[in-house]
Length: 123
Image (cartoon, rainbow, N blue to C red):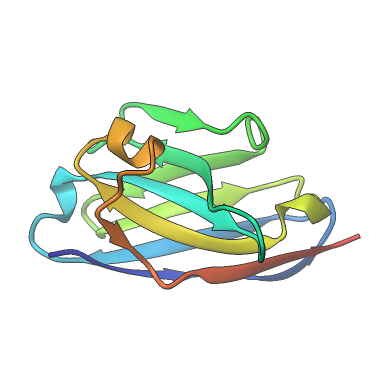
């Protein structure tokens, strides 16, 4: 069992930056691929970025490539999403997710989900 708690969301102006954190608890955290998703009311949840168990490979949605960076610190049981050059269209609730592999997370087959953190980008 893995519990995920996101933090770091907030209100920022367009062009600004934020860093989201996802604190994980549970003995098997290090065995999971991790990822970030986002959702806007009335729309489907969208994959943003994911990372392998040891952080040696990452995958990004085209909409965030070059602006967002996912990383993990297994010693701290934490996954991060550094977001720069934020745009109003990045406004969403951001969720952390854990799955058996990076491909499982990327393909929407995450097993564990956090409760989400709101990111609002003003124009």
